[in-house]
Image 1 (cartoon, rainbow, N blue to C red):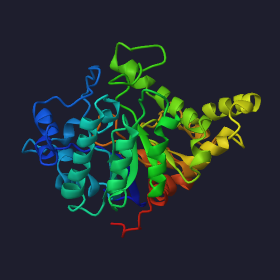
Image 2 (image 1 turned 180 degrees about the vertical axis):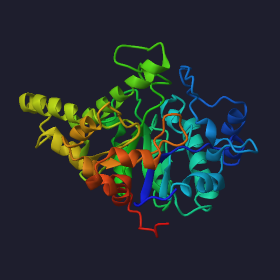
Image 3 (image 1 turned 45 degrees about the horizontal axis):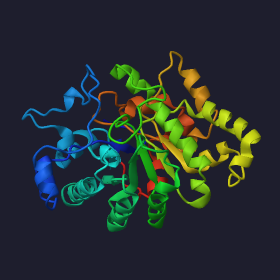
Length: 358
């Protein structure tokens, strides 16, 4: 597909081969993983569409997202994607298991598969470091182990957690990330599983529709926590990426946040300026799932209410059922900000060299 602009996709999900995991797992974790007892599970909400797109199955029955060669040929090539940031399937729930030694070993295996099987296949692949944050010290060890590898461009955490991510319990992870100039990203999915709290502030939904719609609540809570707990004051170079959370909720949050800070600023003396300024300096958002109002001008009005031109990065969420392909997403944004959203903000954040556009 021909496009007139570069595309950097900041959220692609790949399947990790379970048999390959065994090659990188020491005992006793190898035996446990082989038994099928992986750890934290989802809640079992039913999605009638399936989580994966049906058109990612190839004629031989294999899936595009399960093979680096297939993903490069059938997705990166088709959409002229300059770089694709891989967020491996199955990595997020590891941070929500109380069995930290086991899940830290799984995280290491996932990262090793990327290093050995994915990065060598195509120079366009980049990835998030998978960690198990249920023990921040083990997560820090993994960041130090692979943080210098050029294929890894950020640290990924789930947006679900057993306490807000701004809490000092997690600060060692942020300190390790800034050591390698790596952003920290959050991604939804495991809300309500493992040691995390209930998936919404009012309890457990009964349908996938309710659960999926409410996921933005986790994003809001984590952004507020990161600011209020002074993470960005303590780590002034840290960038925080909200992945797969949508866009239009941010302006109203910043308005409410600033208003409350004016009256309650004594409770957070480390905040020396309005929260909205801190957010717009340190937080970036990926675009998928884009809100789709009946009138596109309403979406453009929301974009004008914050520094969207410099804060948004294109993401497809491929191969998930509700993904946004580059041609669809680009049309949603005003021409004046399209180049930055589709590629340049991601290039700047992840320090990606410009490639020859096909």
